[in-house]
Image (cartoon, rainbow, N blue to C red; front, top):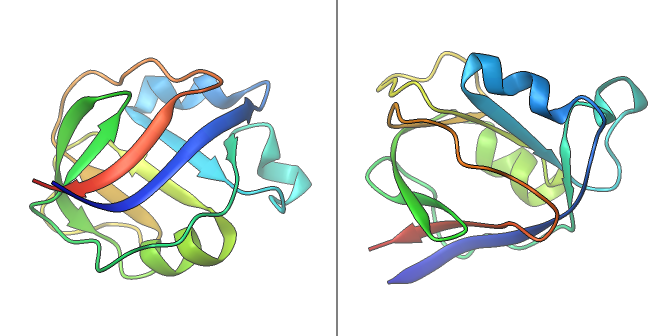
Length: 121
């Protein structure tokens, strides 16, 4: 298994859980704009080691979800700002440029200390 990306949740905004209703969650580094900071899980910036692509896996505390498509901006904002939306709806063509889409499954629990990875298995 090759780890393409890895971060750990260090805090969460007061409203971060609200996106669960729409099968998504959002991460952001320390420089999140105030108007969206409350809706994000906060992480430290981490490098991307390779290319993020459909067919890889999002792992959340060891639970795997197949990546079905990647918005063209998602790797750029993830590397530069620690910002990315993960949508659990299985889209094979991305709707939004800053979103990584994964297979449609129930969202995992995300809490302080949760490890988020993108891996090639």
